[in-house]
Length: 258
Image: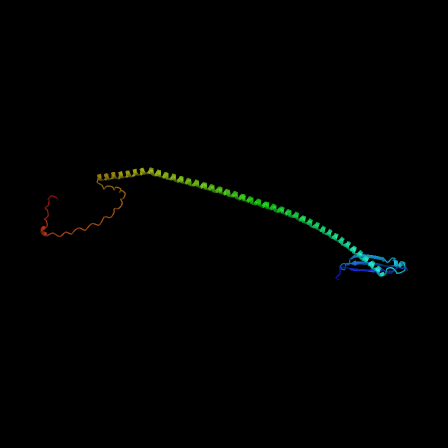
């Protein structure tokens, strides 16, 4: 059923009372039920009496009619139900507000807990960042130190290389000087040896001439550069034959000039 509530009840008494002079009266019980759950949301009871009226006192009328009494009773019952429903709604609102406040407090506590966890995580993140920065700075310092060591080693190697090259040059100069000195010492000796060899050769040649033997060969001096080729000689002039009468007679033997 598409209804919010069901109102049901029973009429306990309606009409005149038990005695003859009793006024009209009504007694009614009512209940409001939730159709979805069957829970009784409200229960009410009302009893209304007609009472005495001026017409009843003077015998003009019988007093208030049963319908009027019933109308008054229903009005009171509806008013009571409205008040109780409003009170229930207020209580429900208060309960809802309290529930909302309780839920708000729970959410606030959760939010505070999350903030605490977030702050803890943030502190851990900051700590990790600081550690990472420290590692990076340490690595940079190590790199700078290694670079400085490499530069120092390079400079040391360059200095050692320069020293080695200088020592090599000095050694080369010493070797050249020693060789020059040795050549200078050997030059006069070699010239003296050659001079002695020439003198020995001349002496041997002179001894050989004195003894009538073949002279010993004299060491030839160093060959001179080849002379430039001489120009070809001009052809000799052809002489004409002389006549036989003009031929001179042979000179006699023992003539001067032989």
